[in-house]
Image (cartoon, rainbow, N blue to C red; front, side):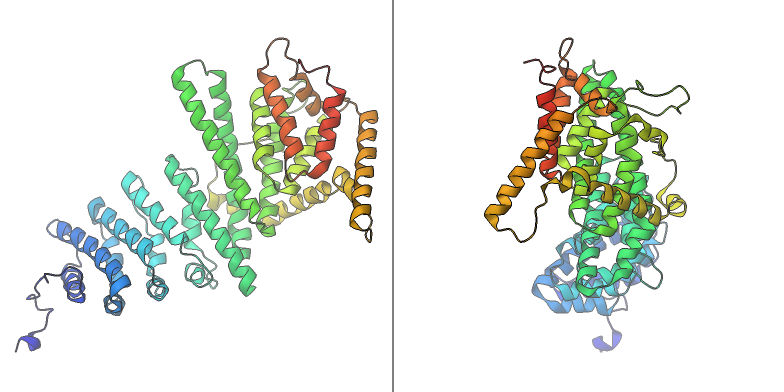
Length: 489
């Protein structure tokens, strides 16, 4: 008699044991009866969502029938129905919190696959939340970061749709790369690294080029372009702060700006160290041509070498430029980038800026707008030429003939290094080397040793950068020997 009535009829009672299949059935009954959100049931729905996460995590570790029931009843679809209504921040925050807790704690891979398989998660990712609400924003970006930690060769295809050429997890996250809240920016950097790693592993193991091509062509160029502009804008703010660093409050802000800039450099180096050529080519080109050369290197000369008809370019102070360059060489180790940058600093002439190097400019475009404007092939062509240039010159000075044994090789390398060092000493000149000359001028301590400290840091970092190999050590040592009289001892 009671069984015929069924448990949907409204006579469903709340089980005493919150960790049981019966309790999840009760929670399902509550969701089923309250699919339309109103003021009267908001509190009930919030508590129901919280309890669902708790029982699912328990079931994942103790009772597989709990998760089987959740999937059988497609309970994730209720989350979407609630989300699509104007349910208010109270319910929305709890929903995101529940999803975050659920995905963060699921350990059974089969359960995870089932959760991802019906595309509800991607629908949640692209939902238009009220991101002006700080709490909603915090839980949303935390949810995305949690999902990125679940990326592997078995799960990544749930997030990337080859037929529609779409990757919502990545696309939605990078929209917040310059969010005003630092924790959001940090989460985006973590997420993108996880996506890059997962994509490359997927490509390497399964030889599937579609996803990697999407990352490179559709997002890498516009994302890296906007990221470089954001870092440059951040540097300009840092420079303004240095010039007015007399107040204590400004000094605190300056410390925060420096810390974030170093975070950016470590993030860029982390990407480059993944050794994904398709990404490194694009990133190296954008860094060199849109930030490091037009802003950092150019600022060394402080317009001293510029001509009257030359277009005015943005600059930071020489001291800031020296500090920034020293940090680049201390942190970044990608060989094509650091070698090309080192050669420009040590050997390039001012005519470099009248031969096509663009100004540093701050972008007002969004990533989606930049995706239309930027061609990925353009970045690849620039970086290929940079890489070719970086592989020549001093870097080739340590090569030895094949076939020699270890002892002969060591002798050959030592002889070449010695000869190369003597030649550099003999032929060294600062003429037509305005950037290197600017560094040497900074070594003059007659008035202040502020700039000299950072100039020495640049030379030290140049000589010890792992991407530079021995040619920079030789060259920098030769430079110091030739200008030892400039340094105040």
